[in-house]
Length: 483
Image (cartoon, rainbow, N blue to C red; front, top):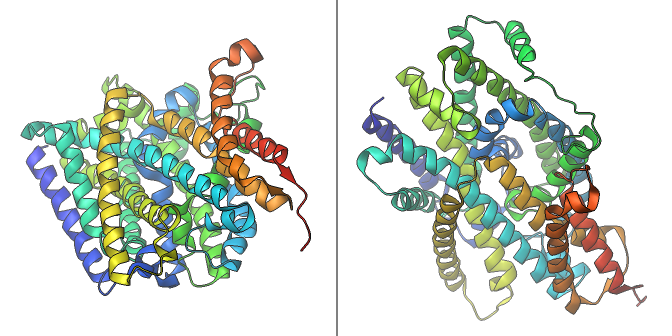
């Protein structure tokens, strides 16, 4: 299909987003930027967060991994359910009781100011790395499918995408993102369903017949029972629970949308309904992955991993499906990037430089600082996307989960210690504990064969990281003195 025609659809889609942003961002202020005036509709937030949770990496990497790991990813998804229950009934009541704008302020009230700064800093690190990895994957596909034809360099493509995101998040923030995420999630899911239906039709297969064909190839295996394998189902389910609890429940980007809902009850409904939808959507992505490999075999296509979906959608499907794929891909990209930049801006402004604590700053001055920070994070995103281009990892979903294991572990330890114990910590030592835990995990991961033999560490590295942080905090703590 003509790259120029594909590009015109991309521009048209962006103009729709810009119109939504203009409409929703009118008369916005700092409060609406950070938490949407605590007046977001819970159903819109829930549906939009499906897109944010999935991202372009899920859209491409989860189907691509089916040939290697079968449906093992669904084991992690089962763990997600446990994680969302933890968020709904442990974390959200805490956040609403304290009426938080930034969830990391809890660490200040419970553990101390340096603990608060440490938690915020780890979120910034994890979200910058995670969001730019997701952004890189989708930009790279757009580059190969469209922009190479115009001789536009990769860095310029990334810059164009970031400018697009800035244009519709610059004023409205969370207030705008709640609506744009809903639109983008709708487009992503529509694209997913159309691609599935098209391949089933072309292969003349029904749903049951396609599952039987996948089963013959070994694609549909869900539960792995070897305790030494990193895919062992107990490891994967436990890891999925804590990945969700940390990457959603202890993540400002995800939680600022939840706490933008007016009441705790509605926010809980949002989380639980999103969990139910997410399970169905991920099953559909895995089913899509099996279909892609069946269809690729029929066509003689040899692409695997992250390459298979773009290759088939852009080169072996009709033009209208190619357009739908590109729109769906962008719809998967924008929710993960726009929310990340907005959340990072919120965290840096509120937690790191503390603009809301400064009585000497007017609302207008705070807004100017916030806008400069917003632009700065866009520049940081550009830099890190170029770093991922240089790394060029073949499976971004694996890299993303590894990044999460290292960077969210200290957050898991901090929040768990604060919630489960009544002890007070030596606040000045907390940053050193939180920096030491990922280093120990890095050594465990890299020398695991020497230490554990045939036993493989997988996604449970996140839990180990959190446990090391928790143990370290215990060592530098004492019983809280009664006042």
